[in-house]
Image (cartoon, rainbow, N blue to C red):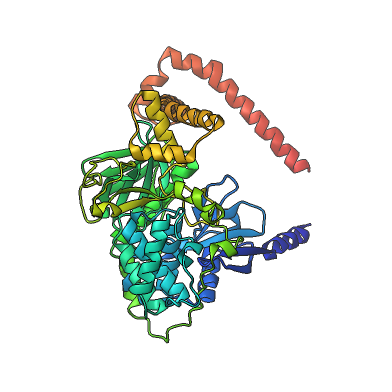
Length: 565
Protein backbone atom coordinates (compact mmCIF):
# COMPACT_ATOMS: atom_id res chain seq x y z
CA UNK A 1 0.00 0.00 0.00
CA UNK A 2 2.84 2.38 0.91
CA UNK A 3 4.54 1.70 -2.43
CA UNK A 4 1.28 2.43 -4.30
CA UNK A 5 0.85 5.72 -2.42
CA UNK A 6 4.43 6.72 -3.18
CA UNK A 7 4.09 5.82 -6.85
CA UNK A 8 0.80 7.75 -7.10
CA UNK A 9 2.31 10.85 -5.49
CA UNK A 10 5.36 10.65 -7.76
CA UNK A 11 3.11 10.40 -10.84
CA UNK A 12 1.19 13.51 -9.72
CA UNK A 13 4.47 15.39 -9.24
CA UNK A 14 5.71 14.29 -12.68
CA UNK A 15 2.49 15.43 -14.37
CA UNK A 16 3.09 18.12 -16.98
CA UNK A 17 0.89 21.15 -17.53
CA UNK A 18 0.59 23.22 -20.68
CA UNK A 19 1.14 26.97 -20.27
CA UNK A 20 0.47 29.65 -22.85
CA UNK A 21 1.95 33.11 -22.28
CA UNK A 22 0.73 35.97 -24.46
CA UNK A 23 3.59 38.31 -25.28
CA UNK A 24 3.58 42.08 -25.76
CA UNK A 25 3.33 41.80 -29.55
CA UNK A 26 0.27 39.51 -29.16
CA UNK A 27 2.20 36.42 -30.20
CA UNK A 28 2.07 33.41 -27.90
CA UNK A 29 4.71 31.27 -26.23
CA UNK A 30 3.66 27.74 -25.20
CA UNK A 31 5.58 25.41 -22.94
CA UNK A 32 5.04 22.60 -20.44
CA UNK A 33 5.94 22.70 -16.76
CA UNK A 34 5.96 20.20 -13.91
CA UNK A 35 3.39 20.37 -11.13
CA UNK A 36 5.90 21.71 -8.60
CA UNK A 37 7.60 24.18 -10.99
CA UNK A 38 8.12 27.61 -9.45
CA UNK A 39 7.23 30.87 -11.13
CA UNK A 40 10.93 31.68 -11.54
CA UNK A 41 11.37 28.61 -13.77
CA UNK A 42 8.59 29.70 -16.14
CA UNK A 43 9.84 33.30 -16.18
CA UNK A 44 13.40 32.19 -16.99
CA UNK A 45 12.09 30.04 -19.85
CA UNK A 46 10.25 33.03 -21.24
CA UNK A 47 13.22 35.41 -20.93
CA UNK A 48 15.47 32.84 -22.63
CA UNK A 49 12.94 32.63 -25.47
CA UNK A 50 12.97 36.44 -25.79
CA UNK A 51 16.77 36.64 -25.39
CA UNK A 52 16.18 39.14 -22.57
CA UNK A 53 18.78 39.93 -19.90
CA UNK A 54 17.30 43.08 -18.31
CA UNK A 55 14.35 41.07 -17.11
CA UNK A 56 13.71 42.59 -13.69
CA UNK A 57 11.33 45.19 -15.16
CA UNK A 58 8.95 42.50 -16.42
CA UNK A 59 6.55 40.00 -14.92
CA UNK A 60 3.83 37.48 -15.72
CA UNK A 61 0.24 38.42 -15.07
CA UNK A 62 -2.77 36.11 -14.82
CA UNK A 63 -6.44 36.27 -13.86
CA UNK A 64 -7.87 33.80 -11.33
CA UNK A 65 -11.31 32.09 -11.61
CA UNK A 66 -12.84 34.99 -9.62
CA UNK A 67 -11.68 37.46 -12.31
CA UNK A 68 -9.07 38.96 -9.99
CA UNK A 69 -5.74 39.73 -11.62
CA UNK A 70 -2.41 38.82 -10.03
CA UNK A 71 1.30 38.97 -10.68
CA UNK A 72 2.88 35.52 -10.69
CA UNK A 73 5.10 35.09 -7.62
CA UNK A 74 8.43 33.57 -8.63
CA UNK A 75 9.06 31.80 -5.30
CA UNK A 76 5.79 29.82 -5.36
CA UNK A 77 4.39 26.99 -7.45
CA UNK A 78 2.74 28.09 -10.70
CA UNK A 79 -0.01 25.48 -10.46
CA UNK A 80 -0.96 26.41 -6.89
CA UNK A 81 -1.11 30.10 -7.71
CA UNK A 82 -3.36 29.83 -10.76
CA UNK A 83 -6.07 27.70 -9.10
CA UNK A 84 -7.67 27.06 -12.49
CA UNK A 85 -7.94 24.14 -14.84
CA UNK A 86 -5.13 23.66 -17.38
CA UNK A 87 -4.14 24.70 -19.96
CA UNK A 88 -3.01 27.87 -18.21
CA UNK A 89 -3.07 31.25 -19.94
CA UNK A 90 -0.96 34.17 -18.77
CA UNK A 91 0.48 37.44 -20.08
CA UNK A 92 4.02 38.82 -20.21
CA UNK A 93 3.91 42.50 -19.25
CA UNK A 94 6.02 45.34 -17.85
CA UNK A 95 5.71 45.17 -14.06
CA UNK A 96 8.10 47.95 -13.03
CA UNK A 97 8.31 50.82 -15.51
CA UNK A 98 11.90 52.13 -15.76
CA UNK A 99 12.23 55.67 -14.46
CA UNK A 100 14.18 56.56 -17.61
CA UNK A 101 13.33 54.04 -20.36
CA UNK A 102 15.76 55.68 -22.77
CA UNK A 103 18.61 54.73 -20.40
CA UNK A 104 18.00 51.00 -20.75
CA UNK A 105 21.12 49.14 -21.82
CA UNK A 106 19.84 46.89 -24.60
CA UNK A 107 17.64 47.64 -27.58
CA UNK A 108 15.57 44.47 -27.02
CA UNK A 109 14.56 45.78 -23.58
CA UNK A 110 13.63 49.20 -24.99
CA UNK A 111 11.59 47.52 -27.71
CA UNK A 112 9.57 45.50 -25.17
CA UNK A 113 8.94 48.60 -23.04
CA UNK A 114 7.93 50.41 -26.24
CA UNK A 115 5.35 47.71 -26.95
CA UNK A 116 3.97 48.01 -23.41
CA UNK A 117 3.62 51.80 -23.56
CA UNK A 118 2.04 51.48 -26.99
CA UNK A 119 -0.57 49.22 -25.39
CA UNK A 120 -1.04 51.74 -22.59
CA UNK A 121 -1.66 54.45 -25.18
CA UNK A 122 -4.18 52.31 -27.01
CA UNK A 123 -6.09 51.25 -23.91
CA UNK A 124 -6.21 54.80 -22.58
CA UNK A 125 -3.89 54.47 -19.61
CA UNK A 126 -1.48 57.07 -21.01
CA UNK A 127 -3.25 60.43 -21.20
CA UNK A 128 -1.70 63.28 -23.17
CA UNK A 129 -2.38 66.45 -25.12
CA UNK A 130 -3.61 66.08 -28.69
CA UNK A 131 -0.29 67.34 -30.06
CA UNK A 132 1.62 64.81 -27.95
CA UNK A 133 -0.79 62.05 -28.98
CA UNK A 134 -0.18 62.84 -32.65
CA UNK A 135 3.59 62.80 -32.16
CA UNK A 136 3.53 59.49 -30.29
CA UNK A 137 1.34 57.90 -32.95
CA UNK A 138 3.64 59.21 -35.68
CA UNK A 139 6.63 57.62 -33.91
CA UNK A 140 4.72 54.32 -33.87
CA UNK A 141 4.01 54.62 -37.61
CA UNK A 142 7.64 55.41 -38.40
CA UNK A 143 8.90 52.52 -36.26
CA UNK A 144 6.55 49.97 -37.77
CA UNK A 145 5.99 50.96 -41.43
CA UNK A 146 9.07 53.10 -42.11
CA UNK A 147 9.31 56.27 -44.18
CA UNK A 148 6.29 57.71 -45.93
CA UNK A 149 5.96 56.36 -49.47
CA UNK A 150 3.22 57.87 -51.69
CA UNK A 151 3.05 54.65 -53.66
CA UNK A 152 2.37 52.52 -50.57
CA UNK A 153 0.56 55.02 -48.36
CA UNK A 154 -2.47 56.61 -50.02
CA UNK A 155 -4.43 59.55 -48.64
CA UNK A 156 -5.88 58.79 -45.22
CA UNK A 157 -3.52 55.87 -44.57
CA UNK A 158 -3.12 56.77 -40.89
CA UNK A 159 -6.86 56.27 -40.29
CA UNK A 160 -6.42 52.55 -41.00
CA UNK A 161 -4.39 52.09 -37.84
CA UNK A 162 -5.71 52.17 -34.29
CA UNK A 163 -3.49 54.10 -31.86
CA UNK A 164 -6.17 55.16 -29.36
CA UNK A 165 -9.61 53.91 -28.38
CA UNK A 166 -11.11 56.84 -30.31
CA UNK A 167 -9.79 58.85 -33.22
CA UNK A 168 -10.83 62.12 -34.82
CA UNK A 169 -10.20 62.94 -38.46
CA UNK A 170 -8.23 66.00 -37.43
CA UNK A 171 -5.95 63.90 -35.25
CA UNK A 172 -5.44 61.38 -38.05
CA UNK A 173 -4.41 64.16 -40.44
CA UNK A 174 -1.97 65.53 -37.84
CA UNK A 175 -0.42 62.07 -37.37
CA UNK A 176 0.09 61.66 -41.12
CA UNK A 177 1.54 65.17 -41.43
CA UNK A 178 4.17 64.55 -38.73
CA UNK A 179 5.01 61.15 -40.19
CA UNK A 180 5.50 62.61 -43.68
CA UNK A 181 7.47 65.74 -42.85
CA UNK A 182 9.33 65.31 -39.53
CA UNK A 183 10.32 61.66 -39.11
CA UNK A 184 11.69 60.67 -42.49
CA UNK A 185 14.93 58.71 -42.22
CA UNK A 186 14.50 57.53 -38.63
CA UNK A 187 15.22 53.85 -38.07
CA UNK A 188 12.80 51.74 -35.99
CA UNK A 189 15.20 51.83 -33.03
CA UNK A 190 15.50 55.63 -33.21
CA UNK A 191 11.74 56.13 -33.45
CA UNK A 192 11.16 53.79 -30.51
CA UNK A 193 13.76 55.65 -28.46
CA UNK A 194 12.15 59.02 -29.23
CA UNK A 195 8.76 57.54 -28.38
CA UNK A 196 10.04 56.40 -24.98
CA UNK A 197 11.62 59.79 -24.26
CA UNK A 198 8.36 61.55 -25.00
CA UNK A 199 6.16 59.08 -23.09
CA UNK A 200 8.37 59.29 -20.01
CA UNK A 201 7.57 63.01 -19.65
CA UNK A 202 3.79 62.46 -19.48
CA UNK A 203 1.83 62.62 -16.24
CA UNK A 204 0.40 59.10 -16.44
CA UNK A 205 3.57 57.29 -17.55
CA UNK A 206 3.77 53.97 -15.72
CA UNK A 207 0.26 54.23 -14.23
CA UNK A 208 -1.37 50.88 -13.40
CA UNK A 209 -4.81 52.01 -12.14
CA UNK A 210 -6.62 50.10 -9.38
CA UNK A 211 -10.34 51.04 -9.02
CA UNK A 212 -11.36 52.09 -5.50
CA UNK A 213 -13.63 54.49 -3.61
CA UNK A 214 -12.63 57.17 -1.14
CA UNK A 215 -14.22 57.71 2.29
CA UNK A 216 -16.97 59.81 0.67
CA UNK A 217 -17.89 57.04 -1.77
CA UNK A 218 -16.42 58.80 -4.81
CA UNK A 219 -14.75 56.66 -7.45
CA UNK A 220 -10.96 56.86 -7.47
CA UNK A 221 -8.07 55.05 -9.11
CA UNK A 222 -4.89 54.30 -7.19
CA UNK A 223 -1.60 53.74 -8.99
CA UNK A 224 2.08 53.18 -8.25
CA UNK A 225 4.57 54.81 -10.59
CA UNK A 226 8.38 55.00 -10.68
CA UNK A 227 8.14 58.31 -8.83
CA UNK A 228 5.56 57.59 -6.14
CA UNK A 229 1.96 56.90 -5.19
CA UNK A 230 -0.79 58.53 -7.27
CA UNK A 231 -4.55 58.96 -6.78
CA UNK A 232 -6.66 59.83 -9.83
CA UNK A 233 -10.24 61.09 -9.71
CA UNK A 234 -12.12 62.14 -12.82
CA UNK A 235 -8.89 62.32 -14.87
CA UNK A 236 -7.39 64.59 -12.22
CA UNK A 237 -4.45 63.70 -10.05
CA UNK A 238 -5.59 64.57 -6.54
CA UNK A 239 -2.64 63.08 -4.65
CA UNK A 240 0.98 62.47 -5.45
CA UNK A 241 3.29 61.19 -2.70
CA UNK A 242 6.93 60.40 -3.36
CA UNK A 243 8.18 56.98 -2.32
CA UNK A 244 10.49 58.35 0.36
CA UNK A 245 7.47 60.01 2.00
CA UNK A 246 5.39 56.81 2.16
CA UNK A 247 5.96 55.35 5.64
CA UNK A 248 3.58 52.38 5.64
CA UNK A 249 1.09 50.46 3.48
CA UNK A 250 -1.64 48.36 5.13
CA UNK A 251 -4.95 46.73 4.31
CA UNK A 252 -7.79 45.22 6.35
CA UNK A 253 -10.50 43.43 4.39
CA UNK A 254 -11.49 45.82 1.59
CA UNK A 255 -9.87 48.87 3.21
CA UNK A 256 -6.48 50.12 2.04
CA UNK A 257 -4.38 52.52 4.13
CA UNK A 258 -1.40 54.57 3.02
CA UNK A 259 0.57 56.30 5.79
CA UNK A 260 2.41 59.46 4.91
CA UNK A 261 4.44 61.60 7.31
CA UNK A 262 1.49 63.92 7.97
CA UNK A 263 -1.65 62.18 6.69
CA UNK A 264 -3.29 58.76 6.36
CA UNK A 265 -5.13 58.05 3.11
CA UNK A 266 -7.99 55.53 3.26
CA UNK A 267 -9.62 53.88 0.24
CA UNK A 268 -12.00 50.98 -0.29
CA UNK A 269 -11.38 48.30 -2.93
CA UNK A 270 -14.22 46.34 -4.59
CA UNK A 271 -13.26 43.05 -2.89
CA UNK A 272 -10.80 41.87 -0.21
CA UNK A 273 -8.83 40.06 -2.93
CA UNK A 274 -8.52 43.27 -4.97
CA UNK A 275 -7.39 45.14 -1.85
CA UNK A 276 -4.73 42.52 -1.11
CA UNK A 277 -3.50 42.71 -4.71
CA UNK A 278 -3.32 46.51 -4.41
CA UNK A 279 -1.35 46.20 -1.17
CA UNK A 280 1.11 43.69 -2.63
CA UNK A 281 1.67 45.88 -5.70
CA UNK A 282 2.38 48.81 -3.41
CA UNK A 283 4.86 46.82 -1.31
CA UNK A 284 6.72 45.61 -4.41
CA UNK A 285 6.84 49.02 -6.10
CA UNK A 286 8.03 50.77 -2.95
CA UNK A 287 10.80 48.20 -2.43
CA UNK A 288 11.88 48.30 -6.08
CA UNK A 289 12.07 52.08 -6.46
CA UNK A 290 12.94 53.21 -2.92
CA UNK A 291 15.52 50.81 -1.51
CA UNK A 292 19.24 50.89 -2.28
CA UNK A 293 19.87 47.14 -1.91
CA UNK A 294 17.71 44.02 -2.00
CA UNK A 295 19.23 43.02 1.35
CA UNK A 296 17.19 45.87 2.87
CA UNK A 297 13.90 44.18 1.89
CA UNK A 298 11.89 43.06 4.90
CA UNK A 299 8.79 40.91 5.29
CA UNK A 300 5.76 43.17 5.64
CA UNK A 301 2.66 42.21 7.61
CA UNK A 302 -0.80 43.74 7.45
CA UNK A 303 -1.88 42.22 10.79
CA UNK A 304 -2.36 43.91 14.15
CA UNK A 305 -3.43 42.78 17.63
CA UNK A 306 -7.01 41.83 16.73
CA UNK A 307 -6.80 41.15 12.97
CA UNK A 308 -5.09 38.20 11.35
CA UNK A 309 -3.42 39.76 8.33
CA UNK A 310 -1.19 38.72 5.45
CA UNK A 311 2.58 38.56 5.25
CA UNK A 312 4.43 39.38 2.05
CA UNK A 313 8.03 39.94 1.00
CA UNK A 314 9.34 41.29 -2.29
CA UNK A 315 11.79 38.71 -3.65
CA UNK A 316 13.50 40.48 -6.56
CA UNK A 317 16.27 43.02 -7.06
CA UNK A 318 15.77 46.76 -6.62
CA UNK A 319 16.05 49.39 -9.37
CA UNK A 320 19.54 50.56 -8.42
CA UNK A 321 20.90 47.00 -8.52
CA UNK A 322 19.23 46.39 -11.87
CA UNK A 323 20.88 49.47 -13.38
CA UNK A 324 24.28 48.44 -12.01
CA UNK A 325 23.85 44.93 -13.39
CA UNK A 326 22.75 46.26 -16.79
CA UNK A 327 25.89 48.38 -17.06
CA UNK A 328 27.95 45.17 -16.94
CA UNK A 329 26.19 43.55 -19.93
CA UNK A 330 28.69 42.95 -22.73
CA UNK A 331 27.38 40.95 -25.65
CA UNK A 332 26.46 41.41 -29.27
CA UNK A 333 23.01 43.06 -29.50
CA UNK A 334 20.46 40.31 -30.08
CA UNK A 335 18.43 40.31 -33.26
CA UNK A 336 14.98 41.84 -32.83
CA UNK A 337 12.05 40.45 -34.79
CA UNK A 338 9.70 43.39 -34.87
CA UNK A 339 6.04 42.70 -35.49
CA UNK A 340 4.85 44.90 -38.35
CA UNK A 341 1.77 47.02 -37.76
CA UNK A 342 -1.39 45.60 -39.31
CA UNK A 343 -4.20 47.97 -40.35
CA UNK A 344 -7.14 47.50 -38.05
CA UNK A 345 -9.66 47.27 -40.91
CA UNK A 346 -7.95 44.31 -42.48
CA UNK A 347 -7.28 42.38 -39.30
CA UNK A 348 -10.48 41.61 -37.40
CA UNK A 349 -8.70 39.02 -35.28
CA UNK A 350 -6.89 41.67 -33.23
CA UNK A 351 -8.64 41.79 -29.88
CA UNK A 352 -7.64 45.16 -28.48
CA UNK A 353 -11.26 46.20 -28.10
CA UNK A 354 -13.98 47.87 -30.18
CA UNK A 355 -12.58 49.71 -33.20
CA UNK A 356 -14.01 52.82 -34.74
CA UNK A 357 -13.10 51.56 -38.20
CA UNK A 358 -16.34 49.60 -38.25
CA UNK A 359 -18.34 52.77 -37.57
CA UNK A 360 -19.51 54.89 -40.52
CA UNK A 361 -17.46 58.05 -41.20
CA UNK A 362 -20.37 60.33 -40.23
CA UNK A 363 -20.73 58.47 -36.95
CA UNK A 364 -17.00 58.71 -36.21
CA UNK A 365 -17.27 62.49 -36.09
CA UNK A 366 -19.77 62.17 -33.26
CA UNK A 367 -17.50 59.96 -31.14
CA UNK A 368 -14.36 62.10 -31.44
CA UNK A 369 -11.90 62.44 -28.61
CA UNK A 370 -13.15 64.56 -25.74
CA UNK A 371 -10.75 67.43 -25.14
CA UNK A 372 -9.27 69.14 -22.09
CA UNK A 373 -6.66 71.82 -21.48
CA UNK A 374 -3.01 70.81 -21.10
CA UNK A 375 -1.69 69.53 -17.79
CA UNK A 376 1.09 71.16 -15.82
CA UNK A 377 3.78 68.65 -14.99
CA UNK A 378 3.63 67.60 -11.34
CA UNK A 379 5.71 64.43 -11.54
CA UNK A 380 8.49 65.95 -9.42
CA UNK A 381 6.20 67.75 -6.98
CA UNK A 382 6.46 66.59 -3.38
CA UNK A 383 3.03 67.90 -2.41
CA UNK A 384 -0.31 66.13 -2.63
CA UNK A 385 -1.86 68.74 -4.90
CA UNK A 386 -4.32 68.28 -7.75
CA UNK A 387 -3.39 68.81 -11.36
CA UNK A 388 -4.87 72.09 -12.50
CA UNK A 389 -5.89 73.24 -15.91
CA UNK A 390 -4.65 76.64 -17.00
CA UNK A 391 -8.18 77.87 -17.56
CA UNK A 392 -10.55 75.50 -15.79
CA UNK A 393 -9.19 75.08 -12.29
CA UNK A 394 -9.51 71.64 -10.74
CA UNK A 395 -12.15 70.08 -12.94
CA UNK A 396 -11.54 68.15 -16.12
CA UNK A 397 -14.78 68.15 -18.03
CA UNK A 398 -15.68 68.78 -21.67
CA UNK A 399 -15.89 72.51 -22.27
CA UNK A 400 -16.96 75.04 -24.87
CA UNK A 401 -14.78 75.09 -27.96
CA UNK A 402 -12.44 78.05 -28.17
CA UNK A 403 -11.81 79.89 -31.41
CA UNK A 404 -8.26 80.70 -30.35
CA UNK A 405 -5.31 79.11 -32.10
CA UNK A 406 -4.12 77.36 -28.97
CA UNK A 407 -7.40 75.49 -28.52
CA UNK A 408 -5.87 72.51 -30.29
CA UNK A 409 -3.45 71.97 -27.37
CA UNK A 410 -5.74 69.80 -25.29
CA UNK A 411 -5.65 66.50 -23.52
CA UNK A 412 -7.15 63.40 -25.10
CA UNK A 413 -9.45 61.52 -22.75
CA UNK A 414 -9.54 57.89 -23.72
CA UNK A 415 -12.72 55.86 -23.32
CA UNK A 416 -13.01 52.94 -20.93
CA UNK A 417 -12.23 49.40 -22.07
CA UNK A 418 -13.19 46.15 -20.34
CA UNK A 419 -10.28 44.29 -18.75
CA UNK A 420 -9.32 40.94 -20.17
CA UNK A 421 -6.25 38.69 -19.72
CA UNK A 422 -4.92 40.04 -23.01
CA UNK A 423 -4.61 43.52 -21.53
CA UNK A 424 -1.72 44.45 -19.32
CA UNK A 425 -3.68 46.46 -16.77
CA UNK A 426 -7.08 47.91 -16.15
CA UNK A 427 -8.18 50.83 -18.33
CA UNK A 428 -7.88 54.49 -17.56
CA UNK A 429 -10.13 56.09 -14.94
CA UNK A 430 -12.74 57.21 -17.44
CA UNK A 431 -16.14 55.59 -17.00
CA UNK A 432 -17.99 54.39 -20.05
CA UNK A 433 -20.81 56.79 -21.00
CA UNK A 434 -19.23 59.29 -18.59
CA UNK A 435 -20.45 62.19 -20.72
CA UNK A 436 -24.03 60.93 -20.80
CA UNK A 437 -23.99 60.27 -17.05
CA UNK A 438 -22.70 63.77 -16.42
CA UNK A 439 -25.38 65.34 -18.63
CA UNK A 440 -28.09 63.26 -16.99
CA UNK A 441 -26.95 64.22 -13.50
CA UNK A 442 -26.98 67.89 -14.47
CA UNK A 443 -30.47 67.61 -15.86
CA UNK A 444 -31.65 65.97 -12.64
CA UNK A 445 -30.05 68.74 -10.59
CA UNK A 446 -31.48 71.45 -12.87
CA UNK A 447 -28.10 72.60 -14.22
CA UNK A 448 -27.51 73.67 -17.79
CA UNK A 449 -25.12 72.05 -20.24
CA UNK A 450 -22.38 73.68 -22.22
CA UNK A 451 -22.48 74.02 -26.01
CA UNK A 452 -19.95 71.25 -26.45
CA UNK A 453 -21.93 68.90 -24.22
CA UNK A 454 -25.11 69.64 -26.17
CA UNK A 455 -23.32 68.82 -29.42
CA UNK A 456 -22.10 65.53 -27.96
CA UNK A 457 -25.53 64.62 -26.67
CA UNK A 458 -27.23 65.50 -29.95
CA UNK A 459 -24.70 63.46 -31.91
CA UNK A 460 -25.25 60.39 -29.78
CA UNK A 461 -29.10 60.78 -29.68
CA UNK A 462 -29.80 58.27 -26.92
CA UNK A 463 -33.09 56.42 -27.00
CA UNK A 464 -35.58 56.28 -24.14
CA UNK A 465 -34.23 52.89 -23.12
CA UNK A 466 -30.70 54.30 -23.03
CA UNK A 467 -31.80 57.20 -20.89
CA UNK A 468 -33.58 54.86 -18.47
CA UNK A 469 -30.50 52.64 -18.26
CA UNK A 470 -28.30 55.65 -17.59
CA UNK A 471 -30.70 56.82 -14.87
CA UNK A 472 -30.38 53.42 -13.24
CA UNK A 473 -26.60 53.66 -13.46
CA UNK A 474 -26.64 57.09 -11.86
CA UNK A 475 -28.93 55.92 -9.03
CA UNK A 476 -26.61 52.95 -8.40
CA UNK A 477 -23.63 55.29 -8.21
CA UNK A 478 -25.44 57.57 -5.78
CA UNK A 479 -26.53 54.66 -3.59
CA UNK A 480 -22.99 53.32 -3.57
CA UNK A 481 -21.76 56.41 -1.70
CA UNK A 482 -23.17 55.15 1.61
CA UNK A 483 -21.51 51.74 1.40
CA UNK A 484 -18.10 52.76 2.78
CA UNK A 485 -19.78 54.22 5.91
CA UNK A 486 -21.70 50.97 6.45
CA UNK A 487 -18.49 49.00 5.97
CA UNK A 488 -16.75 51.13 8.60
CA UNK A 489 -19.57 50.46 11.11
CA UNK A 490 -19.45 46.72 10.39
CA UNK A 491 -15.68 46.66 10.84
CA UNK A 492 -15.99 48.46 14.18
CA UNK A 493 -18.56 45.92 15.43
CA UNK A 494 -16.36 43.04 14.29
CA UNK A 495 -13.32 44.53 16.03
CA UNK A 496 -15.29 44.90 19.29
CA UNK A 497 -16.45 41.28 19.06
CA UNK A 498 -12.90 40.11 18.40
CA UNK A 499 -11.71 42.09 21.42
CA UNK A 500 -14.35 40.43 23.64
CA UNK A 501 -13.51 36.94 22.37
CA UNK A 502 -9.78 37.47 22.88
CA UNK A 503 -10.37 38.81 26.40
CA UNK A 504 -12.59 35.85 27.36
CA UNK A 505 -10.07 33.41 25.94
CA UNK A 506 -7.23 34.95 27.90
CA UNK A 507 -9.25 34.86 31.14
CA UNK A 508 -10.12 31.19 30.58
CA UNK A 509 -6.48 30.27 29.98
CA UNK A 510 -5.39 32.18 33.11
CA UNK A 511 -8.03 30.38 35.18
CA UNK A 512 -6.83 26.96 34.00
CA UNK A 513 -3.24 27.90 34.72
CA UNK A 514 -4.17 29.07 38.23
CA UNK A 515 -5.99 25.79 38.99
CA UNK A 516 -3.07 23.67 37.75
CA UNK A 517 -0.54 25.62 39.79
CA UNK A 518 -2.73 25.54 42.90
CA UNK A 519 -3.22 21.76 42.69
CA UNK A 520 0.51 21.25 42.19
CA UNK A 521 3.06 20.79 45.00
CA UNK A 522 4.58 24.22 44.62
CA UNK A 523 5.43 25.51 48.09
CA UNK A 524 4.67 29.20 47.60
CA UNK A 525 2.95 31.34 50.21
CA UNK A 526 0.36 32.63 47.74
CA UNK A 527 -0.73 29.11 46.75
CA UNK A 528 -0.59 27.86 50.39
CA UNK A 529 -3.07 30.56 51.39
CA UNK A 530 -5.42 29.56 48.58
CA UNK A 531 -5.25 25.85 49.50
CA UNK A 532 -6.26 26.61 53.13
CA UNK A 533 -9.51 28.37 52.16
CA UNK A 534 -12.81 26.40 52.54
CA UNK A 535 -13.81 27.20 48.99
CA UNK A 536 -10.70 25.56 47.58
CA UNK A 537 -11.14 22.43 49.74
CA UNK A 538 -14.75 22.11 48.54
CA UNK A 539 -13.66 22.51 44.89
CA UNK A 540 -10.79 20.01 45.42
CA UNK A 541 -12.90 17.18 46.93
CA UNK A 542 -16.17 17.68 44.99
CA UNK A 543 -14.86 18.48 41.49
CA UNK A 544 -11.13 18.12 40.97
CA UNK A 545 -10.59 14.68 42.58
CA UNK A 546 -13.54 12.96 40.79
CA UNK A 547 -12.45 14.50 37.49
CA UNK A 548 -8.88 13.30 38.03
CA UNK A 549 -10.06 9.75 38.83
CA UNK A 550 -12.27 9.74 35.72
CA UNK A 551 -9.35 10.75 33.48
CA UNK A 552 -7.06 8.14 35.10
CA UNK A 553 -9.66 5.42 34.49
CA UNK A 554 -10.05 6.37 30.85
CA UNK A 555 -6.28 6.41 30.31
CA UNK A 556 -5.90 2.94 31.89
CA UNK A 557 -8.66 1.52 29.68
CA UNK A 558 -7.07 2.92 26.53
CA UNK A 559 -3.63 1.57 27.52
CA UNK A 560 -5.05 -1.88 28.22
CA UNK A 561 -6.79 -1.96 24.82
CA UNK A 562 -3.52 -1.07 23.10
CA UNK A 563 -1.67 -3.83 25.01
CA UNK A 564 -4.32 -6.44 24.12
CA UNK A 565 -4.16 -5.60 20.42
